[in-house]
Length: 410
Image 1 (tube, rainbow, N blue to C red):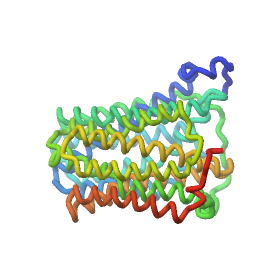
Image 2 (cartoon, rainbow, N blue to C red):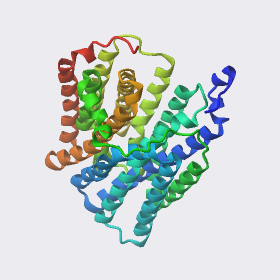
Image 3 (cartoon, one colour):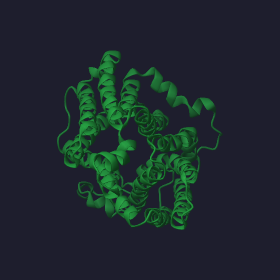
């Protein structure tokens, strides 16, 4: 990893003068936009074909199952093989899947089973791409600038989450096949850019992994109440309080808007998250961080309830922005606590567990929301989700007092 001068290290522009990071950032940006555009297109198309909240929930489950089955294997692949090639192959397969969806949509024969099959394949590609690109970042960043590179890389996700859904909604309004055609091209660009990255030599393992080594992170998390409490809090809070799967219902049937409105709704939490991330970059949380994390989760639940009961687009957007800001506070504290409480030699495997929990909360949360909406209706399901999130935060404060008592991130 090349070094930069102290003066250069103080400027974020130095990151983009470093060719490996510039290429890494470009590939990651294209890929993240693809996932966000595709999520809007798939959600709206499935609901247009079925009018079923249950099918919306099944989208999340269909994507989660292959990811859960492959994430630990993917983590091993990222350590054993050339990470550029692992990411590149994942993006090529994703592009081929998007091309299949585009062709089926333009030809008019695409139905829900084919969409679900494609979503499962995209879950597999994400399982390999996400941990691989995370492992590439330290090798792509200039020496001494890993923290700043991590912040810029994370901001890419929020920007994609803000703009990508709106682009997906507008593209879908033209034709259902257009967003899939766009992401086909974008994923191929990401794959080409990844292939051009020149990385420092990565550590490799020549011995085959054992089950004990593959799942050592699970045992470590289970034995550490600080890590277990923070990760599981996020899992159950988002699992219960996530309303992403219900947004097509809210956009069409409650707020009476179209695909463009769905795109704006999906981007609103990221706007709040981006604003809060900017604030946290300037002003750190210096005391009672454990309590602040619980408070943020409670605000997340309250904002979910406001969104559930809103019949005005402007109020729904405000509630979602507050929800995103509260979630960002929780995420920043949780990730910092996990990193600080984990020895360096365990961070990869613990990171795999954390990645699994994050995706479980998001994608299984969509499934749970879809089932609840199918049984009770969209509004009662979202209200119950917000109440459940608040209940989990209060319960976890009792179950994990050491987590609540954390005073500083040191």
